[in-house]
Amino acid sequence: MVSNLLKTDVEDILESAFTGTDGELLVVDPSDETIESIVEAGVDRTDLPEILMLADEDVLKDVMDDFLVASKAADLIDDGSLTVRELPEDADNSLFVSEDRVLALVSTDDRVAALSSEDEEFVDEVFSTYREAFDEAEDHRLRTPAISHVRETMSEEIGEEARADFDSVLDSMETARGNGDGLDEVTISLLVAAKNDALLYDISKWGEDVGIASKATFSRTKTRLEDLGLIDTEKVPIDVGRPRLRLKLGDDRLKDTSPDQLANVAESMLA
Image 1 (cartoon, rainbow, N blue to C red):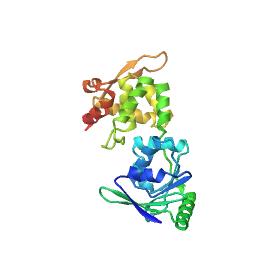
Image 2: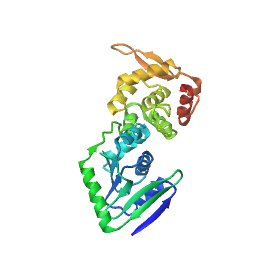
Image 3: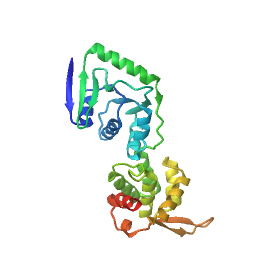
Image 4: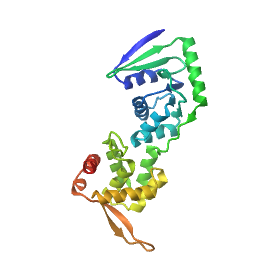
């Protein structure tokens, strides 16, 4: 039995793929948009099937370069909802494959169609083929920490107010890459720390411990932001050793803005 499921976006296709899938769902050769949509859908649902993703290595690297996507994907991986492996060669189609159904995605500029088959023999063959390919594939190494761990440890190490500001900044952003398409996670962390008068030592130690970046990367980024006037520092004497640096926002435009506008204002100053 074959039927066409004409949809207007990937989210509608995902809903069709998730519905009625109680076991494993193989996702084969997804696009960057599909990967992002799966991650977003995953963090908002409690009824996900176990998702086994076989994706192109270059596509994965590009998508997971965005902290907003990668940190949520890491959460799904940690709780066992998602496993990501690298597709050794291109598939003929982007597929969603369960033990009961195959959905093949066909995209145009403004819509997505899913060609669906529930033919038992065909579905069994496709599922077994790609399940075997998945078993033999290499895991994709995700270096980004899970967002739940980032939030929890920020609350503990930097403070609840800083964590709330961090969440507001992330919620206001469409991407966090730091390549001209958005601030990166180190810059965001430093701006939030400066907004909350945190010590550079504390935020950089937290960032290194949680797996965001090294202390050296935090220090270099701090120097860049300080040179550009986004943050200031003041020395805080300690009993032993050199004084530590307290971070402060360095521009009135940043000081006077709300957390949900902090990223937009900072990006405009960095442009």
